[in-house]
Amino acid sequence: MARYRVRQPDEEVANRPHISRGRAPADLQRSQDQHANVLELQRLVRGDLAVQRADGGTTALAGGTATDTASDAEVDGLDLQSDVSDAAHALKAKIPAVHFTSGRRTLEEDSAAVAGNIVANRNYVDIFVDSRPKRLIKKWVDDHPTATKQEITDALVTILEPMNDTERSYWSLHLGGRAFDISQSSCTLADLQKVFAQALQEETHWHVQFVRTWSKP
Image 1: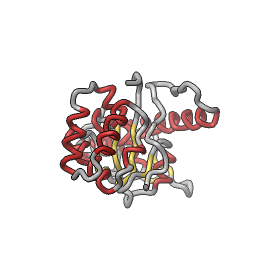
Image 2 (image 1 turned 90 degrees about the horizontal axis):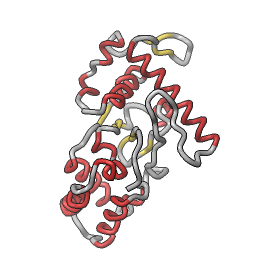
Image 3 (image 1 turned 180 degrees about the vertical axis):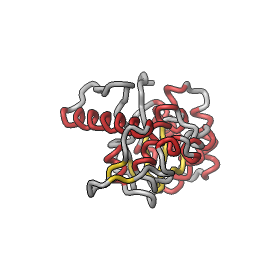
């Protein structure tokens, strides 16, 4: 399986780093570093900073100006929540070659994408953080080992549709416009994680998600 760890991102609260209960000192430092990165990226979008090259030189922002980058049609088309959209705009300013493959998804779109991964790997659901949606979906998948992609898609929609946004967010932050995917050929995971430490490797792309607060379902 391509992913290296369970999808369970650090929480992020506006204007300050968020300390999760039980977080180790090293994890706290990573969270603070990530928060500093986000603040730097926000300044980038506003045009306060230029993009610094590794050799100490300065590289112009994609499109010539921060304003051009902030109105990038590719990012705007992802239909992300405003703070996540700001992060995506600024990421593209810092890594101009980055190519986004997915942003906000409808329940049907997200279920179809996940169903394709389940067909390829029947243990795919195991990568998700433990929650009520995961437990229900895993049971269904385990009980239907020969289900087709369409059958799995329909089952996921049926399971998730009655749930509220908080419960669904434990399954997929794409549903709330708080996650985006990036083509693996457009940048390295190492470079992406320098900007967003929570970036993950998925089967065909890099995945970045942003959590505010939620109550455990």
